[in-house]
Amino acid sequence: MSGFLTELLASASLFLRQPLESFCDVETNHTDAVHQDRLVTLRGEYVSVLRVNGLRTMCSRADVEAVAEQQRIELQGLLEGTGHVIEGWYISDPDQARVAVDLLALNGCEQISRMMNADFHDIINERRLRWPQVMRWEDACYILWTRPAVLTREEKKQVAAERKEQVKAWPKAGSGQRFTLRSELMAGRHDAFVARVQDSMSNLGISTTLLRADESITLARETLYRETAGSGWKPTLVGDPVMPRLPDDEKQSKKPENLLWPSLRDQIFNADAENQGGQLVTVGDYTYAPVDMLLGPEDPRPFSELLNTLGRKRLPWRSSMILEGGGKAAFAIKETGATMLGMCPGNKDITRAFQAIKRMRETENHNSVRMRMTASTWAPVGEDKLLRRRAADLSQGLESWGGCKTTRVPGDPLEAAMGSVPVLSLGSTATPALAPRVDAMGMMPWMRSASPFPQGSILFRKPDGGIWPFDPTGGGVREHIADIIVALQAAVKRCSETPFSLACS
Image (tube, rainbow, N blue to C red):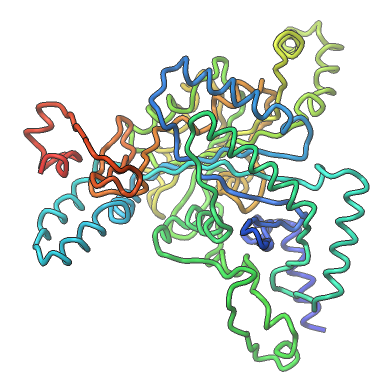
């Protein structure tokens, strides 16, 4: 009886979003014979993470607008309905630059020096101390969601029958991963969606990498608990070897679920959250301050302009921009109400905005999407003064990005902060906006400069402080090597003190 009451109370707390685990909708993974690896949520949604490395070429403002227009055309039919969602996620963390510098360059340099029996300890340590002070680690992803709404009525019946058969074939999962939520029909629809997005970006010169399911979960956990970044942690997913559990309760120990894969929530979360008033929330060793976009920009600008503004301040921050279809249908009632109450001064502006979007649809075939954006910054626990200053800088940076309006009082700071954590759930406390798709695509985080090398012994620093690895040996990417490295004269003279020191040595 006590066990039943415990499970009932736990289910109620998850439904009411009391514990931190309630913000995780991801339930299991789905891997098939062709090595496609996706994540599956409690609602039957399929999720994949496409890491956006950036553009292979340098682009001007006009080039960025042209690429955004091409993305709109390539993905024209994907965001018409409510079945597919594209979430543009980005993170910048100067405090993790040391971990990134070691993984990208210095660990390899140390290994080579040991193989050569050479002592470069002082030089490597100097760079390990100096580079993180002027560099910052960053990452960007497209998180692709496919909802059951993409299926027809008959296909939904097929999926229900398919899952019913799986439930009969397996024992109850209990608190473990419910892998019976998988569906081959949903997987096929989702794979086609992912392939189309990846191919369209590749054709436009944007480098991408499709992450495995375990890499996606690791990304989510390291984002949630910044102190675990670079720790090498990996989740246990369906198909991985798993050690049986043996609870103290004799009845519980005999359940088949102890032989199955443990819940992802139990693996991901290791510390609870605590709200600090109405604006801050503590998760693990850091306190977070969320900032929501209240109104979209008057002049939509490329994401790179926001990077330049916040990168110079060496501000740790992350953001999530959700683009989903059904924008016009979602705002139909508001448009009707604004038209009926058009005599009010405020509603006249709203009516003109709806009319402008309608003209773009009729004359240029520009569909609109439902857009939401939320961002967060953080500081170590106890550094509330530093955190509030960073939150003010983040808010000002967003508002200078084409004239956005932001709010730092989202209602529930925990829900707002979790809205900028990737993969775990598709939610945001930000106010939805009706945006033309070409403008929304131009604001997504894809226009960073991409290096062809995943790592290298030389690390360059981009103007906004980002790390750009370079491998002088070619790294297996090219056969012939002929490099010319150019730097300012002052930088060459101080090569031992700048990020160009490896190129100068």
